[in-house]
Image (cartoon, rainbow, N blue to C red; front, side, top):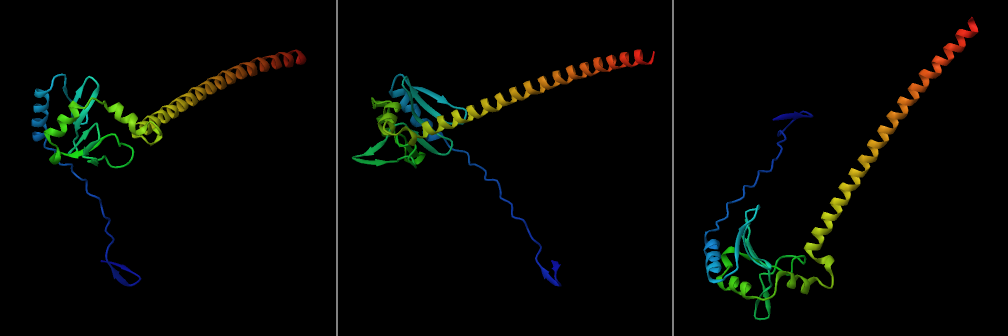
Length: 194
């Protein structure tokens, strides 16, 4: 207990956030489903990306991706009759479906493999009228802005370097001129004395 103004108070204790340790995702059931899909359909490729996601692709691109957060991204909207189910949260990724691993079925994956539309076809159907709402567009725009900023910074550094070099040359030249001027003054002074 600390004393403040004659009264005892509790010592202040700083609260510290504890690091949340991510649980290891169990891909066992997902891998079994993926193996069934690959053996039942030709032309599919199994890929594991650098983020730990396991993906199935065909020649048109990504079909579905089992992510390390325990959710599967399927690259088309999943419908139950006329009702959209497993919609990706938010408005930026409407062309995708997000399904928890426990709800993924072989029927869902087979429906995506048999679907003749590509992911880009769905993307265009959702965002053709207003691309600015699209998450892909927003990511690309952010990347363009970052590159422009880096180029601007690099350009300003180049011009800064050129200015420093020019100033150094001018200083060297003025120092040389000062020596020549001093020498000339000494000569004139020597002749005047003699």
